[in-house]
Image 1 (cartoon, rainbow, N blue to C red):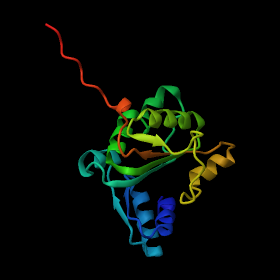
Image 2 (cartoon, rainbow, N blue to C red; image 1 turned 60 degrees about the horizontal axis):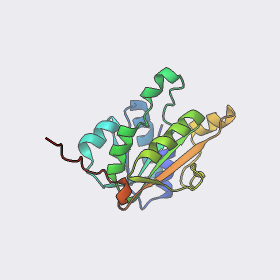
Image 3 (spheres, helix red, strand yellow; image 1 turned 90 degrees about the vertical axis):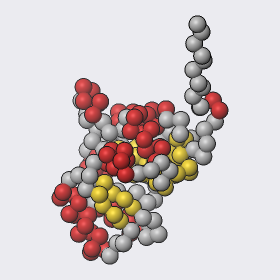
Image 4 (cartoon, one colour; image 1 turned 120 degrees about the horizontal axis):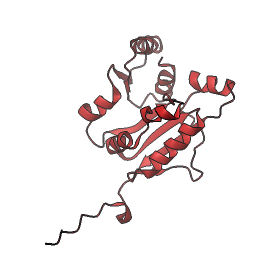
Length: 181
């Protein structure tokens, strides 16, 4: 409902934020917070984020991306519906400026492991934490989902990766050798 976004934007007034939200009440709640707090650094697109990435954002334009507590789709047969999948992460990594970051947080351990694996497999990204999972950055407020998870006895995992400045030669895809014949 925009609470975390408003808190982050208020704490970083020099940074502009683009928020994608399809849930009309969520847009309304964030607009209300923007007005109440006189925030001038938030823009909202009421549109699917994947379509925004595909059709509205050029490569290398984002300094950071936040994905906090996406639906974990608990049942194994539904895991394919999870937001954090390799094709989306490749698109997001391409939209980041070199040195930009991608920060995900979840209160569901199996999803945290999947997020860490998917981001680790993306050659354009590098983990910022030598331990795999990162401590909660100061800019991320405790969200209602996080508080709910803590009350249920869940842990909370943050994963923060940076966009590499350039790919190492071992990460470049080599061209296919010419076919003989």
